[in-house]
Length: 158
Image 1 (cartoon, rainbow, N blue to C red):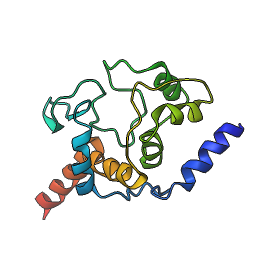
Image 2: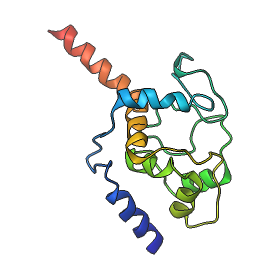
Image 3: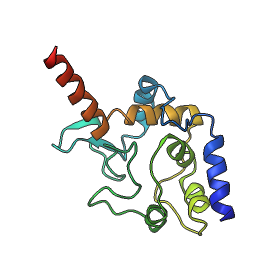
């Protein structure tokens, strides 16, 4: 119970996170920062189109990461630490993403309360850069596609 309160307090205290789900990062800056991620990650839509990156396969596909339950990319072999965090309810919102990125293993240990590890190495990013990356990645996913569909429907009805 105490560890969950500690995690909740840390996530609520993160300066980049907003309770209303508002994304605070700069997607354009995140796109530039994503260049450091492409050795391991790619953003590929359900039709197989590469939207960002160069088809890196060491890490999971980041399409739809914003709002997604952790550890759920089909066919990807996650670390036991990520599986444990997923079972504990980890969802990728801005606060969790910003908390995870600089030190993935420390984040998973804090989140789960167990001595687990992440397969992802520590990243040399600050909170601002991590929030920017999240804003960039949040552009790619089902929610964005739904918003574009709604916009097209509105234009068609005018």
